[in-house]
Image 1 (cartoon, one colour):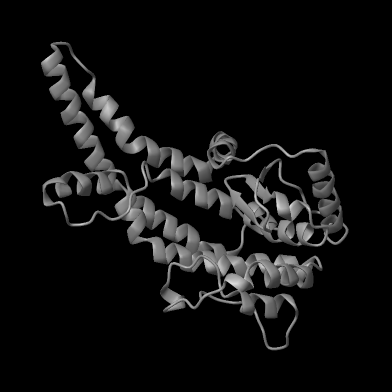
Image 2 (cartoon, one colour):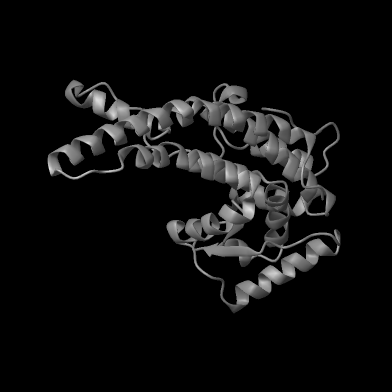
Length: 284
């Protein structure tokens, strides 16, 4: 599998625009840090290198985010292990290792160039699910207990990993210092402070581009489904979605412009099962 596809260009273009817009929060937090340190230095009576500290706080996250895409080995392994610790993931036990190796063997029988992830861990959940972040993969305990579902889900996550979707998610996440919901109006006396934190932390820009990013991620789900079909795991993946995703499906208003990260499950199942007339999805 190639490491880059033309269909990824909108995602990287969106990242560049997002990164550029994060310059405003960077200036805001840099200014806040510099003024705060100057005041503290004056009160304490000893000099504080306010300007270099402010520059690091302001633009350091942007630089690390860009390095995640430019030089992944410098950033992605650290972020992958951090994700495991932060999400409560654990190392696999022997039967899960065997299940993983069996699933990898099934996929490699159809694609000899398939390369398993270097770092993966287990989430203590019953359902069938898998996730990619940076260069790491998370598989649920329930998924590894299923001989049929494990290779199907792993084959679906492989393009996300191989083509850099996980790195793009990581780079975007690094732009936000502290996640925040948009501040409510009341109480008015704290609104300026909450608004400043929302902007300076990068959450405001992230909120602004949420729908655009989720529209892009929906298109990437179809791209990953294509690989699942290619290695013969389409029907198995469709059966797993039928039992573990379809029962929880709900209508999404204005789907094409919504914040839903995945397309409708039924549409994906039709393609995975090879229903005539169902072709690769676009942005909806």
